[in-house]
Image (spheres, rainbow, N blue to C red):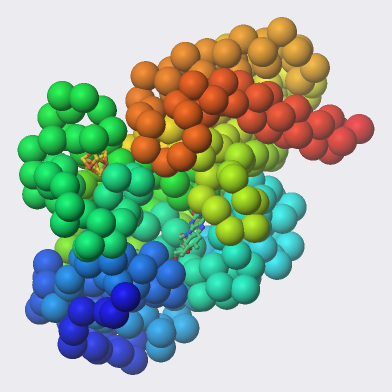
Length: 337
Ligand SMILES: Cc1cc2nc3c(=O)[nH]c(=O)nc-3n(C[C@H](O)[C@H](O)[C@H](O)COP(=O)(O)OP(=O)(O)OC[C@H]3O[C@@H](n4cnc5c(N)ncnc54)[C@H](O)[C@@H]3O)c2cc1C
Ligand code: SF4
């Protein structure tokens, strides 16, 4: 499979990249590690006229830590995040998620955290070669009016399989988006849309500059299921965060359960999370109740389009949620003695 033709620009700094984006708008795509973008281009799923490479923008590759935050530049390779002691200690779900992305040799060194969050949604009816897709009627994402994954669907239900996004949503991360002369901050919770064709609200002239993770003494964990752990995308995953109460450190003050690879975006499950608030870290009944509620909520969004059966993926939701909750609870108990 060959790449389509395109013009290539390699700006020297952020200003230059923003100028190019403002000029080319929807005709251009940003190229970070290329491990998602170039694969899609080779399959003929995307034909941008211009690629703007972030290769020289070392100013977007960093991890810094303050008393109550960690900031990560969008072009930071996943390998740097996995090796970061502040991330390992204080944002463990992200460390565990990045460690599991694809194959170490390629995704960890070329793949960046920005590209991970902004990778396109996937569906096994669509992520195929031009030749494969030419033999059947076009679906919504290909410009048609049908969906092979859900009967009578009026929109695309392709699945977000980003490990990083699920973990970062559990951690309550925010995104710093820049365009020429402008900057806005968006909660990752609010970043996604309900449409698998345009799964997030990034504008074509915008660039993701930074990810901010709040630190508040909480413990997090991430679990996922994939066919072959060394190379495949998750078919279901879960990120959780548990924050101890100030007054009673064996009680949960705040909980966040996020289930990934089960919908058009990672799913923050507010009701399931609420079953844990005020409960003790060793309340196994509350953990089970929250995990079962997670399955019920996630099942309403998922479609059969990323491998395995839908029934199996749904059944695995509580298992992964419980494992992640137990791991985060254990980390909180260890810290509190
Ligand atoms: C075999 C294989 C296995 C994989 N397994 C996994 C997996 O298990 N889990 C997983 O999460 N991913 C997986 N991936 C997807 C991908 O490798 C990773 O998500 C990687 O982190 C993407 O980063 P990148 O820098 O290569 O993104 P790119 O391909 O460079 O970019 C992805 C998208 O983000 C946009 N973009 C990138 N940076 C910015 C920015 N700063 N601002 C605005 N837009 C930007 C690009 O324009 C593009 O649309 C896999 C890919 C392959 C080929
Ligand atoms: S979910 Fe439906 S519309 Fe979307 S890519 Fe798959 S088959 Fe196409």
